[in-house]
Amino acid sequence: MRYTPAGVARVALTLSHSSQQTEANVLRQVRCEVNALAFAEAADKAAQFEVGQSVKVRGFLAQQSIRSRQLVLHINDIILE
Image: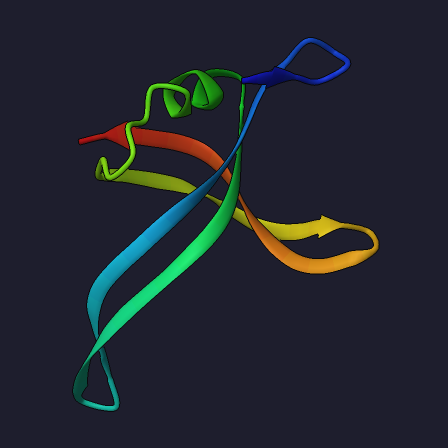
């Protein structure tokens, strides 16, 4: 865990996703990895993750920075399973 200059807890992590989704009436396997950031209380929960643990997250996508169009998921809420 790191802290912002303002003292807010911050955790950077990568989430792996795997599911089956329907597209054009065909079932397909979906797998991806998403870079994510968690701040404050969400960072405290993210710091408790174990590799391979299932979690549900809620948040929003944003550019990584002004100079990069890479997307990063900003986590607002985490449910540990």
